[in-house]
Image (cartoon, rainbow over all chains, first blue to last red; front, side):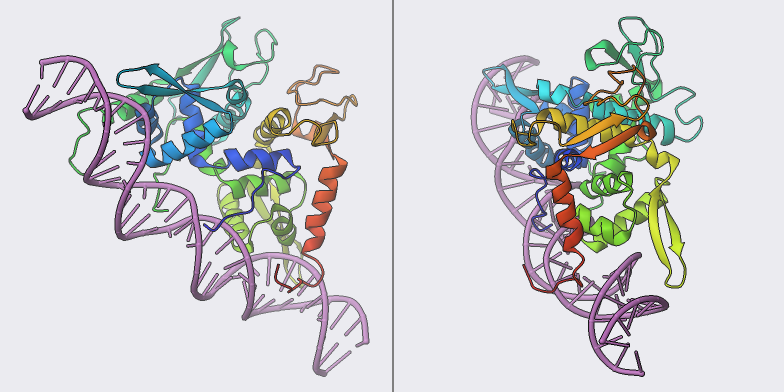
Length: 174
Length: 174
DNA sequence: GATAGTAACTATGATAATCATAGTGACAAG
DNA sequence: CTTGTCACTATGATTATCATAGTTACTATC
């Protein structure tokens, strides 16, 4: 693509965030970070993206102040990525995306009855469904107060992806 | 780009919506549709995208059931696009994006003091800021109950874009 | 009734982002 | 001293995107 018009100086707030969020890879990487998976290889495996793309997008996320790179050991220097406050504040966006998909993007029964990902309000134990306000206690939902529970099907899919990168980086094509 | 892995059959809801929403053009076109601008030329002008891209994305949005194409006159047949219920339900996502941008994406004073786009709760008249629940009456905010008011700067920007496409499709390069 | 305008697109070629695959450097473990 | 792990970078083929121009069909103006 030729250099597309930059939207980071529009006055429209949707335009500004579209510049960052209007990108499949960014969204998937953010998902991984919200899941607590900050290691490079884990992101590559779970997001299903090439390492080069992940590398480029992580740099962008760090440059934007949405994520930060932190060493978790020296001697082999190893880094992981985590969300900053600015990044954590994107939870509403991802949560809204998940809510929409749960309501519209699955065939009946495809998830085995319930949602693909359940969210439980920690403070009162209620399953919040896709609401923005807890149907049990009426509190406004926020990132820290929610516990995500993937359905069996989703859990299996994640496990398959995570292990696919392990066995000494298999070299059989296909 | 080579054919990237399709995510519409993942079990992860964020992955599924990322397949549609992880695209700058889709987000910008949705913004226009939420603004009530459904005419092709208006979308091209205001979103700042080429007609070919807009054409392709509108087809996708229609195919996904998010938008629909409706004739608003015959004899020259003319069509406009509008959101379906499934599309209108994406409001939460766009609203969350705007909220994040209002909080993080502007330099101090860049918008002239207030937010770039104000939202007023129709039922009680309160300026809701970037909240998901009305700070005035406590009601959960939804698309129909909100009235958007662009700031003077944003309004000027939109007017400039809308008129740029008019004068008989100017042909001076630049 | 010829010219100009409006609206919704489609056609074309240059440019650049993305993918799959392989490779690198630094260290640890067997 | 070979194998393994982790966080990346390098390469080349493929394809989406952009800018620009063209098409079709009808209306409005001169």
